[in-house]
Image (tube, rainbow, N blue to C red):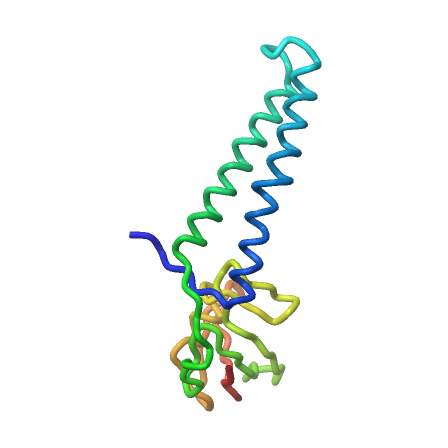
Length: 157
């Protein structure tokens, strides 16, 4: 059974644009590279041609995976989310109990994760440890650097 990916409307639009780019400009660029390599002579000993063909295969694989994600994605209606518990698309304000550092994150699908913008994947250790918790709860989260305690200060949509 296919894994369902939950996306925001913006995330879905971003993936659709990426797919359109890969199918149009991306394929055209790869075809051009293959044609240029083919013009350089004997294909049996042409490393540039082999590399271009391999790049084409990887490009098509990326398109296939993206099509699969889009076919199995669902848009989340943020207005129906319960903000009393941490869920996908929740915005959480958490505090590291040990050092007092306060962080703001939004839990999003893996394809939408962008740490610079405070969006972490629901598959990440921090997000997994926060899911289902309520404001005021302490979450013990196992990270590669050991277990860290985070207090959930605030949950919003």
